[in-house]
Amino acid sequence: MNAVLRSVGGDAIAVAGKDLRLEARSRVAMNQVLPFVLAVVLLFGFALDPDSGVLRRATPGLFWVTVLFAAILLIQRSFAVEQHNGVADALRLSGMHPAGIFLGKAGSLAVQLVAVELLMAGCAVVFYDVRLRGPLLLMVSAAAATIAIAAAGAVYGPLAAGLAVRETALPLLLVPVLAPVLLSSTRAFQIALGDAVGGGWPWAGMLGIVAALYVTLGVAVWGPLMEET
Image 1 (cartoon, one colour):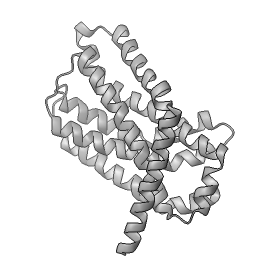
Image 2 (cartoon, helix red, strand yellow):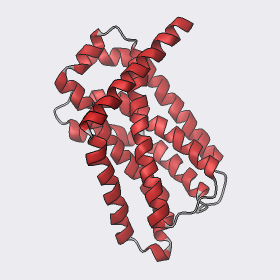
Image 3 (cartoon, rainbow, N blue to C red):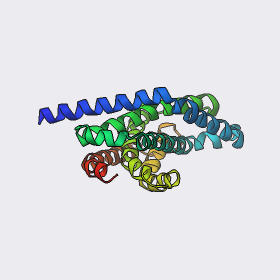
Image 4 (tube, helix red, strand yellow):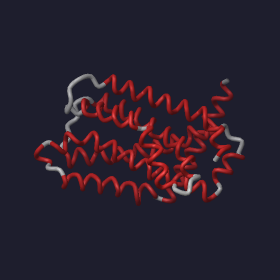
């Protein structure tokens, strides 16, 4: 059992490192995703009146919708490259454990999403006058939501990449699946930022459960998924 876990862990680190090095060379996040985030921040800053408080109250929902759209861009790019360059076939024949490949891909997506979230959080503090009331709740809910989005993206990414209409198929597949994540993370952020009353930890707990389910699903189905795609 320990040997299997070490093998899965080693494969996950290798795959995550490969994906992050590929991103560092292609600079998709730097040249496309991060400018998109900045454009959204500035657009809503002009569209909504900061002095009225509407912008500050809308920040949690805006934050996670932006993260979701950024995740879709990252996932599409990641799996499209593998389809065109034959990387998917190489991974299938590499002898790596399917669970390790899935965890590595989900891990690399999570790292890139953390960078997006840090940029979005900094912009929200600077431009939206956001005040943090519950830092621990915010960090825990953000971590669980990020894991859930990355895990779901790693499952549905290869399914959409094999379709001729992958640019539109991935959002249609991913958004309904991640609706509970968007709802729970938005509510947890509202409470953490002091814009809603009630307990935020049940929402964080729901995020943790959803993240665990998506990770378990990915580990279970990645082997058959690799054979089908």
